[in-house]
Length: 537
Image 1 (cartoon, one colour):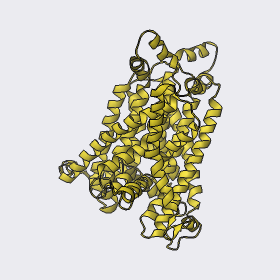
Image 2: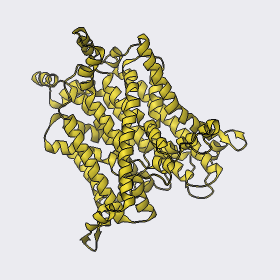
Image 3: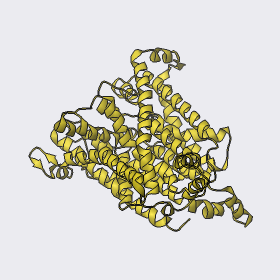
Image 4: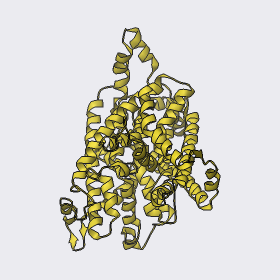
């Protein structure tokens, strides 16, 4: 636990605490009375209420739509399965600012639905909820489906032989085994939607505001650090409560499971019911995910004089305004380098943390587990701004160092590594480790020979998530990315903030390139995962 605790203390707790101190401590005196003053304001109460109920609604809607998809990916074998898994993951790696822009082009003024049927959903809560499902669909499919694919279906079949109905067998055998993964996926979706920023800002306009957008407005627009600090503390406490409830709910629910290779459990759909479910999932993916991505690609080619590559060619030329010190195409290499380093950091920190949580129990460890999830629910704006005011003096003077960006990105990647690996690690039968120890294996060799072969698939899934999150991270990176090495999301956001058709078209072109890069990376990971897991179990 020592290395993960030190990492989070230095790169998360310290920056956040510094922001809170600057906002609430004036002339050496803590201004705790500002809590009541701020939280009694009607506009702040409206923000808190909307943040809560839209996050709950988004989480429920995401689970309702994505759990059938998790089942299809886990239990069905069909042509193009790996490619389709990549397609549903691409939205999650897109910058949230581009998710909002893609849906604005689909459901906003002059969007596809407006042109075809005169339907507009922008500035409505439905646009926000649907965009959240689009963004978080992959979280449920990969987190729940990753474990579901390894559950031995013969356990459920045995219950059927003993007289249980299909529903009762699933409810009493499979659902308890999946409960930790479902709870973990729901927790991640809730935290992401509760801290939603760009999606709400673009699709909600001035009508809706979440804690995240309000913290940004108070910090960057008004420079009211006191109000921002109060809201940050409220967000921090709320996330802590959610994590405590989650820990109490799923504690002791992970059990020793009979696990198989995914290829052994997957088969072609059988019967009308399974084929109907399969087709329904394909249709939902086409409408919810493929259609917005297709609109995004179409906008990148649509110029004022017809379709062409004008916006892509413009990416190769220097920026005449001087906003970007390098050609925009260079942001692709910057993003990939940062993402690789951030993924390695997240795997080391998250792997150590998951191993510690598997071996030990107690209040200290449960608190440590909650600590790992906090970056998902605490404002990335606060973390990024905190980096600037804390990591600027020896021995931690990192403001001019490139490593600052992957460190911030790894903070968000670590929870995905832990939540993906932990259910599988806890499901490994302890007797296997004990048998290895009796045969003379050291703890390291027992882990390498027993745990690693069983969790290698989960480890690769975790790596994919960490890499994807790093590519699309925007909230903290926008504060700390250097002008000579911006990332793709930062470049897209700055282009969208500038008027003109060329800037908008270049933003669409860069977003399309980011989407293709992510898809290719995830496809390679999918192939690697399939090649290295076949025949291991």
